[in-house]
Image 1 (cartoon, helix red, strand yellow):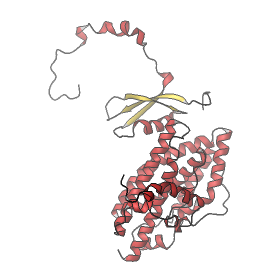
Image 2 (cartoon, chains in turn brown, cyan):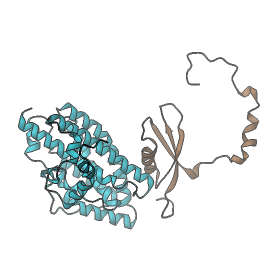
Image 3 (cartoon, one colour):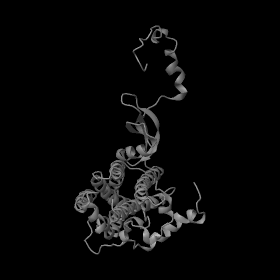
Image 4 (cartoon, chains in turn yellow, purple):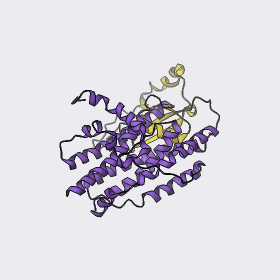
Length: 99
Length: 254
């Protein structure tokens, strides 16, 4: 093991699963594992038991930097009143799917 | 299929189905007792895969027997002496290292076994084997990763794994046991020859041991008897637990 961990807890990992090739990976939960290989192995057991997963990512939870929920207001709201950022004035051609 | 061939084919199916039935049962004993939640789920998953394989093989056996015996009858109403699994799979689950070492030995064997049986002239057996091979590759990946980590891990994990390997070693040859049953089936072109299994298995095991810094036990006495119904005392206890419901409530449906 590369880094020191407590005797009773393995490292925490976040799991992202992709359901179809080309689709985004979606966060589906977390699990404990001693290293990346085992984390993938566990992710396969815990999150892909019921099929429809083509790819899995595992990321150490401590490597994820998230915005703070308490600052959500000032962080995201300034974007919502800028109408020109929302391309809803266009009609989408029928042949374009998945938008 | 003439009578003798049919009998032998049923015996062969029982041998490989019982291995998976009993090992699946042993693995399921970890349910709720795994060292960590994720491993609890992993062992449970593997147990279910093995039960599924055993169920498919037993269904095929009942079909060939064509005697109104159902898969459930075969599992719940047979006596110890009629079980044909090798002794390796019936040993108590031991500690986590013991479970992993046994699973690794068995999964490597299963990989090569199903690789051969995919070429069976019996289409159902070939189909079951192709599906089972896929599942086995995953079981193998799981137990091999643990072999490497326990073997080349801490002093305690290393010694526990080495002890498990030493203890299990005399039960490994039985997986490659063949008698008139397999020989006749090979002769009749129902299954391909299984002669190469043992050397394929040994080669893969040795490579893993090198990586996991585990010593190969000196070849000594090898156990046998399971394939013809002579078992350790552990199987009877396992069966009494597994069969009690079906025997207490005949014809119960679940």
